[in-house]
Amino acid sequence: MKAFRTISVLTLAAALGSGMVANAALAAPQMSSSSDHSADAGQAVSDAWITTKVKSELGTTKGVKSMAVTVKTVNGAVTLTGVLATQTDVRKAVAAAKSVKGVREVDASGLKAKD
Image (cartoon, rainbow, N blue to C red; front, side, top):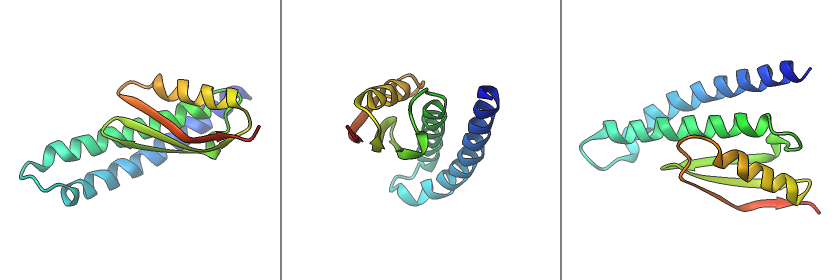
């Protein structure tokens, strides 16, 4: 059952990630005011990849309801927002995000516990 859940989460993450990558790559030139758009597109793709990986990690972290957490990444800085059941779950979510390669910092000030 856990293997099925993991495969389902990874499949969902990959599907979402490919959509984010495509959208980020298309949007990146509009966000840049410099003449070298390729660096901005590369960073947008990298941020989308990090967001996807963090969501995937959250989805496989015991006790963390990944659908309750919003993940946003800008220049490698991950912001987590949402409400989890306990403070322990919040700490697990932060640890999961920090474990992803490419994450420079994690801001969890918007991630709260119900208890």
